[in-house]
Length: 193
Image 1 (cartoon, rainbow, N blue to C red):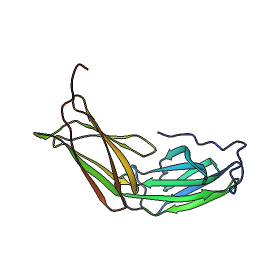
Image 2 (image 1 turned 120 degrees about the vertical axis):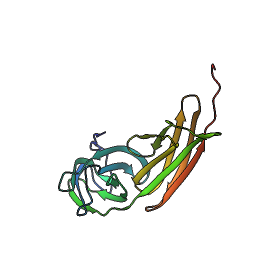
Image 3 (image 1 turned 180 degrees about the vertical axis):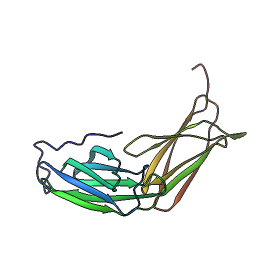
Image 4 (image 1 turned 45 degrees about the vertical axis):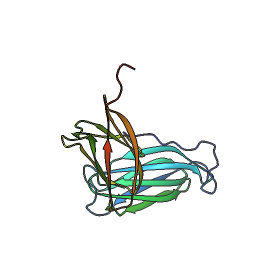
């Protein structure tokens, strides 16, 4: 779950400087809990917006999260209380400096839906949420329902699969506080091919 995020070595990440910096994030009072998490994504530059790495951490009991040796440059911070609040923050980090930010979580995005067959709900379908810095998977309930809560605003690819019924990929987008709903109909797949 946790990753490594190294400096850019000899890469001059102008205007941020060469090397790495330190980032301290503090959850606003009483918003961090056992299910809380923070992910930091780093980019090489505005001209090359490829993600170079992602680091995930859980806050300490006092609501702080420290990241040392982050590559200098543009960063995207995604944070959630793991329940129903989240935030996305774009910022930057300068080389050889420490930056502290307070995270103010707002009501997060909820993605929910139901997996159906032609004659009713499909139980135990695997529903995987893509587009996050980690893999998040749920199994549909007896009624075919699934739900992901407390997500940062944005777009997510949702992959739904079940042995014998194939795989479908759907894209859902939403803002903070919204509910994005999806109903998926799967049908039997050919066997023996």
